[in-house]
Image (tube, rainbow, N blue to C red; front, side, top):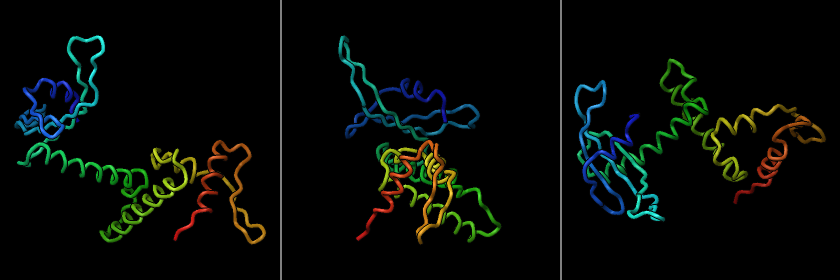
Length: 188
């Protein structure tokens, strides 16, 4: 993480236009580094302000990578974009489904535990996508806090098993709606 990245990118020379993006390459040595490294930056216009202005003001989304790959900036951007998505998923499994906290002295046991964590993460995401669009944008740990870690009582009555929620449960209506949608799911 580079604190002054935005200003560093704005100070760079002329950006080259390429397929709806603008790109630039430069070398920069951050504090604590022994040598300068190659930075590849890509930006895309997100908004143009013109009202009441003599010259338009462009607003950009910036993407910047420190890399030793020798590809073009757009190829590097595409490569790292895919990788960043995967790293976000790994972070979610490690920190929100605790895939990285249950460690044993066996590689295969750790691999199995991580695979189970990935499976549970995928099941949680899939269940939320099928039943509750509001929770779709919540972090897994937030959803787990109000949906799974809910205080309740498991009751068996008339050969049926159900959960009895507390009378003043904060999310009772939402919880019951999701539970009902889960029960109504049908797969072909």
